[in-house]
Length: 386
Ligand code: MG
Image 1 (cartoon, rainbow, N blue to C red):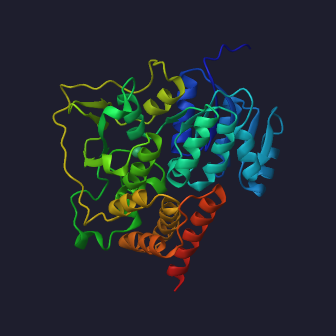
Image 2 (cartoon, rainbow, N blue to C red):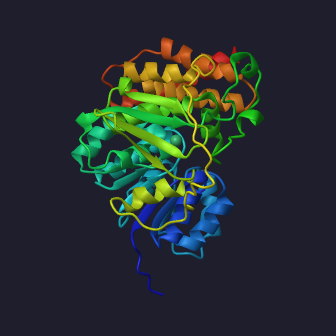
């Protein structure tokens, strides 16, 4: 059977929410899938491997990789593991675009490796830019690698900025749904449980990002992501609560003209655009029906009820390793919250404590960034053991 593929991708994090939707897009657009990686859900990974026939599959955990290898021994696929395996997937030959949909700082090294080969990065792993934004963007410039955001807000900004001069930009306006606790105050939020936080009104996403949406830390990380991606000071990035999640973000220019991108909340659209850019193609997102769309509403964010947002602004101003500390501490704190070992506001308190106590490096090398993240995680785990 011969295939006339439109384009080719390598996918890091195939079994997560973004990974699965990327494969929906791959099927729809007839993309060649050169390589896959996953850590969990071996059953699903096997299904995906049989369907898309990648030449390399990485399973992060060694034991799972051995099991996986036995399962797919009838296929012509090489199974690799660990960080080296992820890097192999990111660098597989033949892939024009690397979709980085892994969760957490684990995505950093594979992304940097693919950048060095000049590959286009469809970036869904926000931690990469949050922790090492300056370094990643510098490397991308050096190696002529395009970084196209997959995060819905940044995809919107990217689209609103096309063909414009960055010097004429006044503000980037990130929209936020407000998460499941929008409108609630501090007193009512003190005792919310992981189950309550996991019920997001508009988006179906992985656990980590859903908790981040409930604390608004997700929006905080997105501020930092925007600062690096578009090379703009944090003062020029604003957050507005927009519960309907129809406007995915906006750019205000010096003449006070505002350009927005609208669509139904459907991640397959930004995923597809990051792969087909600069072209557009018909996809799976259903059209907006303005006769059914009764209103679009907006509110300022409540910084007192959601203090993680201010913390992220603070880290964005500090630069250096501050954002890696913020991100690492948050990753550990969210994990502890999900385990029931930390309260909702405990997440903020732990991140703040890490930011205040872990030594800050102003112009960090990659090792300093990784070290900062690891120390922050350890700092938070230590607080919770006391
Ligand atoms: Mg987002």
